[in-house]
Image (cartoon, rainbow, N blue to C red; front, side, top):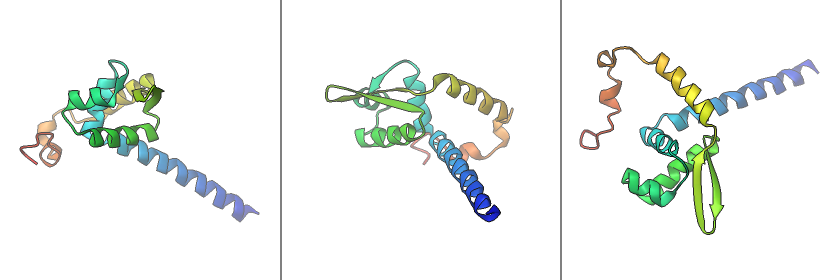
Length: 123
């Protein structure tokens, strides 16, 4: 019976790690971070987000789906439209603050920016 309990414990740990991985994956994209920042100003329809970001509706919808899967974004229906909002703004603020504390003080010494530029002309 101890073997079965160990398997269950291992599965629970693995599922927890998968949830962490999904959350950090959702936060690993600069466009998704921009969407989260924009949703801090209040609820928005996909159309409003596409206009603000200058992206295709399908692209914004895919990013919103990823964010919704982690609970970072909530969606509610209003007629035929979907209205998006932040799911856990206080927790997201705390996570952002913790992430800021982990960032290097002098990012010029790191090559991350070269490999992950947000400027489409450089990609």
